[in-house]
Structure formats: C-alpha cells, structure tokens
Image (cartoon, rainbow, N blue to C red; front, top):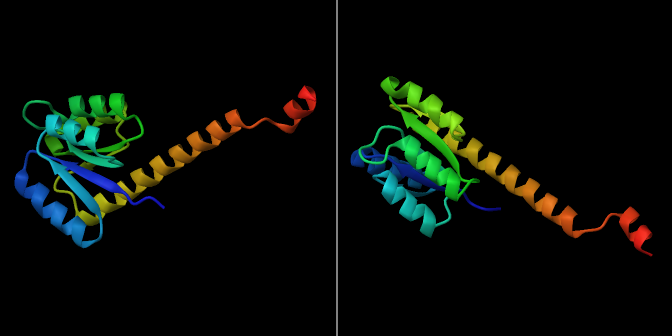
Length: 148
C-alpha cells in the first residue's frame, strides 16, 4: 500500500518547520514550501498526494496555486488552510477543487485526519481509474462470443 506523501505550503516558516517535525515524529512523509511558486516546483519534481495549502500568501496566493495544482495534477488532493478573515477564500478554494479546508490555528490531529481522508479519497479515485482502464482493455464474454 502506498504511503501518503504530504506537502505543507505556508509563508510562515515557523509553522512549516514545527508542523513538519511533529508530523515526521508521527511517521508522515512531509515536504514543505514557503510559496505557491515553490510548491509548484516541488510538485512537478516529486509525487505529492496531499497538499495543505495556506490561502493567504504573498505573490501567488493559495487559490491561484490550487488552480495550477489541479490543472497540472488533478488527482492531487488539496486542503486549504485559512484564517477567519479569509473564510470566503476557502469557499472559493472548495469551488476550485480543494477537498476540504482547515481554520488556523489548526490542531495537529485535525491536520492528520483531513490529510488521511483526502489520501483515502485519492486512492479510491485511482482504483476507479484502474478498474475503468482494465474494463477498456478486457473484452466482455458477450464480445468474445460475437467475435467467434
């Protein structure tokens, strides 16, 4: 079974380092990015399953980053991380393909639970895709009889 690879994206460096250490202690594989542009570079180079993405960042904000992640890697699950003042942005993120959102300050267990749910959702989607591809490759008994 594939192990979840998570990326935290936030311009608050202290949040990134602390949360990464805590998640790593619990056995999670975590990479971090301090901007939307850096996140896109990492996701192009590495297989990332779940992204925890801050909405409010300088430069490329979370919603712009989300749209680009979903355009390039539609199966990557993205969870928006928002403060109370940017709740509307989190809702916009859900409309743009985010699977969920967390409100800052987010509890570590809440981050883990949301990430696990998102990862399971991705795995179910991947399985549906595999089944559909197999059905396309395999002929049904009816098709085999018709051909003989």
